[in-house]
Length: 107
Image 1 (cartoon, one colour):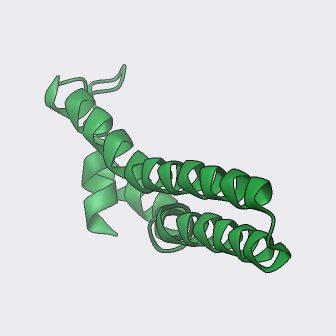
Image 2 (cartoon, helix red, strand yellow):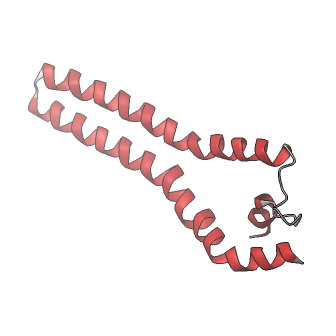
């Protein structure tokens, strides 16, 4: 019964993180990075300067790499936390089971 009380208290926070912050981090930021890179490349192409075009291409490639890395951060963090859950460290000092995964999956 103890775990249910904790989960119900954390429900708004869990919902905000799962439905708000994670999608913004995982999808929104990479899209913004790639769009900014395309805008910079477009400006360089319109200016017809070869040096600026090469710099903009390099920056676009870097931003694409950053976008892919940001996209996979959520997966990596989830894997690390799952390793902690599988280690069996899911009891607090009083012996109550307080696995974060139970609350996370519930909401």
